[in-house]
Length: 250
Image 1 (tube, rainbow, N blue to C red):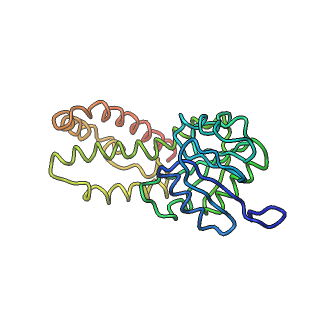
Image 2 (tube, one colour):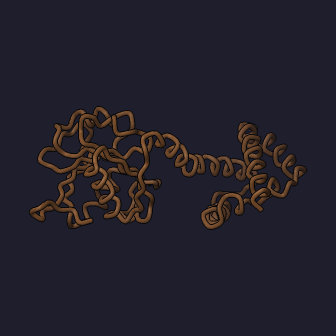
Image 3 (cartoon, rainbow, N blue to C red):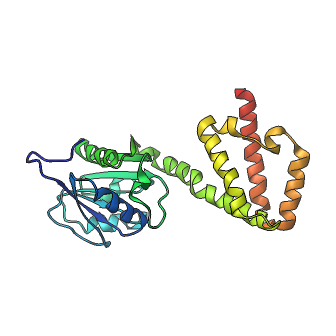
């Protein structure tokens, strides 16, 4: 989609929020010739004479940031969990990159990532979709009723994965094994999951039904990192359920 009005002029867009995502989006969008990007601006800004404003602020501050904007431009947010009501009374859209964005991310960090969209009007949805496509993302629409489940899935896939790897790192450190040694295993596992799906990618003693080994592992966890015992038990139970699913599928 080419961003222009009937006169062929650029679409003027402001980014509010100078965190990791705000900076990454401002840097990436500023390289697109059909956009004129302002920002990232600080929270509470009220940019005037623009076509759209995109809020890259924490969920709890979206409503206040939207309320500070004089009605006129489209107003969007980048929250995965929040619906569009927090942007009232503006004509609203949302654009949530399904991607983790580190500090000082390269402009290409969002390339090929998913982008969850919503809009209060067809025009607002079209703007969100066009922004995603200009960023070379893969857009899909999410209903308000599904946003919490969608965002929970994203948190499990990304945030909780880091938590799990942190637990593995702590336990491995007790035997002198570091993150560099674990990383190739993690990368291969994620690639297998992406290629094969969770059921077929599952390996290890739980999948094999090797209860003796699992109990030895648990004893070691209790000895070396007792704070991880409850997490280990929960993961074993969930993995057993996944293994049973794999057996039915097979």
